[in-house]
Length: 465
View 1 (cartoon, rainbow, N blue to C red):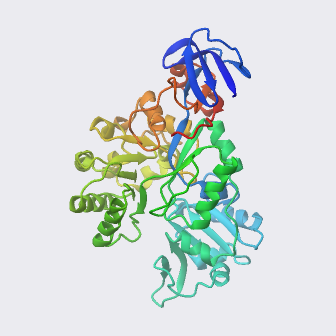
View 2: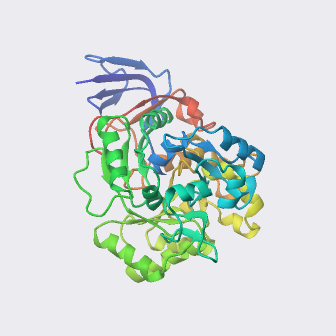
View 3: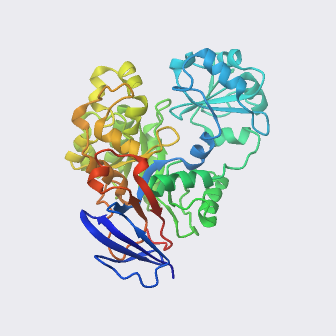
């Protein structure tokens, strides 16, 4: 049995407490605890011990792959010449393909295959828009993938039926056309998450392919990904998962590029509810949100139903969210990451609706925070700071009335995986020791949230969530 004792810590607002961990469980909290049998005694020096953070929405394999991709958008790339240079210098993968990420149209306009050919036409290139909604392939990539017609509804074609190179929300299908590659390893990402104090994540990738799901499970089983993982994209009826992996609500994407037929959306939600699962519905626009609410009026609510992103929430539907028992998993980190773009491109009348937080919490709608990595910043402390200040990169404030208190923002990462936005987890005796030791007391940390203040992360061995 492994025993760790942490001395002189700030725990739940009380200074000078000790904490004893035995075999991955918190077994005692109090002053001057015994160190008998302890394999390690850590002097917290007044730093806080808090529960491990949970990122309620990210994409594990995409985030790992992102780290090995060429940057195609700000701040590294801001114009056509810089993009062409970045692509020319990018190493190809084992099959000679170049994978780019983070593109936004301010760099080189509305990309398609022809435009991309003028930037780099000698090798197969695919570039993902920073929203994650679209890939753009150059002509060499289209030819190599054998995409010559609208073989999938996501393949955009011109009036003559020729693919334009834009492929919308068809990642799983597109992978079947690309040279086979194994899912990226997750060891580096697991270490990065640990360094941030994250002990659990919700993978929000929809419709996980069997190979991708198996790779995620294997990474947890083998310990290369030490976090607990909740899967939104697992198929109905998924079982035989290891104890640190679980199935969450069923992910449904209401894509703004092609809104689903209302009856089809109702049928998908009804099927999930019938399988005993809540739904986690991707809603970025007000149209998507209204479509979801209309569907729930038809089929009814299910405990745990949630909205992913909720990028635009009109004030007049906030009460509808509460009435349907919906919880919101949102990403205010985008305000720091893309806020200046939003201010330039979103209608002024829409800005008060952008990534609402305080209004939702005040109305009784549970709100959890997350990164949406790799599309948003992974660092939870940066997201917490963004929720508090709502400042863009240039210092402009986006709707100050939606700012959270630092404690509210932290609680957005402390709610349980199965109850996002619910009562935050606390450091108490008998709970798994998924913990974070900080360099300073919590009240000081919350004055200037930073990943630099994470001293050590503890990941409990027991399987309980």
